[in-house]
Image (tube, rainbow, N blue to C red):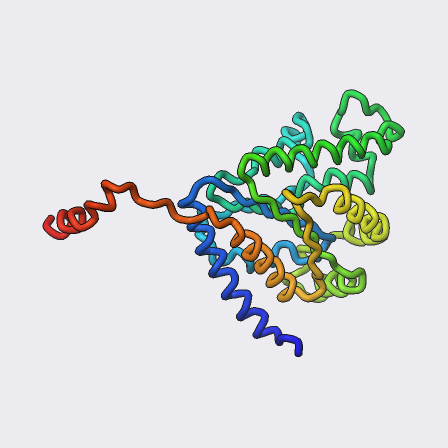
Length: 267
């Protein structure tokens, strides 16, 4: 028997409270950071998922970065630079709303964008060939391996939306006045490239899902269910780290707790 929407949302509330407590412990432990990467087609529900899953976190314990078109400053660096400087500190969660994978997704569908990176050995579209993409996947895999080996726990979620559901959500944006601002005619142009995007997502996931940086494919047509699956996945995997716990007080402090209480009470 399938769960109702209310049951799913009630379960999500319980899971995200547990995640919030776990983040407090992660902060006190101070040896791991958690990077949550969220990818998906337009209207896949990335923003609302982030809002709902991380609602019970201490605001200082989670930092969300939404990566748009690179700025002039970002273009003066390699494509991973802006992601590297946005990585979460130890004890914190970092959420990438769209990620470094845009550099093997959007740019693969639109290889002309690569010319804007002003790379030394790329002078025309002909230079953006299979060898170029092979190197880029190697660079991304190396980036993730490096941060994982230095204490960052990585989750990569692909919100797998159906084309019919995207159509419904785009129409809804046009129908609801308060949603109009989210719509762009460019969404329709990108929708025409749906099949190409699916091919690029499939290859990116196959070439970069590693034991230290796995991809999780999340059915995204039903938003409440997608949010619950993401929350459960993170909680289940993080619970496997038995070393993540609050540090013990040193013996001297522990032995004098009663003394400290008496000093405060007698002020």
